[in-house]
Image 1 (cartoon, rainbow, N blue to C red):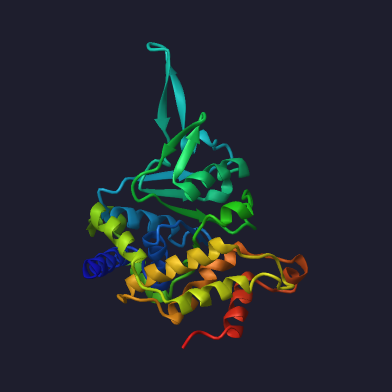
Image 2: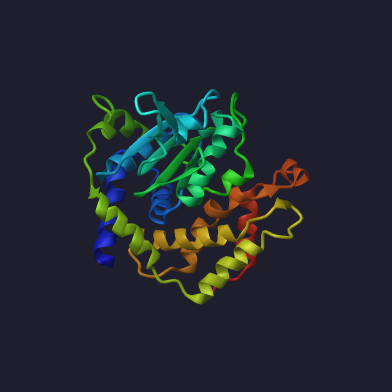
Length: 313
């Protein structure tokens, strides 16, 4: 089973790389977040391929349902979750599910919607369910939310509340590519966008089996302790106003397991944990205003913690 999971992970990654140029590490981490059963937040300036990445992942999985929501200031929670509508013929309410009922949901420019609408995703992301008009509706399938956002300094954006940031297992960015890679992008899109011609690399069942295999990757008690030490070290630091919770420890373990799957290893290593610690933990921290004004970032805090805590041999 593990060999077939290795193959599925490799095929999925290769498929996405046919569309996304030059962002190998970021793409692998986001795919690992998917395999870990979490949700990813991709933050970057416009035009760096955030939406294209989500489309490429969806098109690479045969049979996977894909929905996209363009977040705008006038978007309502019912536009995401769905609504019950009265049928005048039967005098009964019929539920019309929203785009959240899917396998892969692209929440595009999530920080352009109001906080009230942003929070509509909270229950769905955390508990795989949506409650509409007092009735619980389960979310079946893969259910992977990949949200994109522009930097909060951009006009017309609303910072995501801490509670919602904590629901994202991982936050990453793509950044700019090299000149050679950008020239290759021009060539790729000269006649047609490559995402439009992308063929599925794995089917829905293989994707589900890959998620199960990621949970079965071995992680030692020593590495679990190492993860807890990293996360707990964010608490009590003078530059940190809001530290990471045990949810961060759980997320770091799951992403490290899934990343090991993409690295075709049956066990987790300290180096794998270190490589994703910042992407998994940093966005959950709130830095004290004085420290932030002096230039301290959450990623700097995680880097310092990794320097302070010795890794298991």
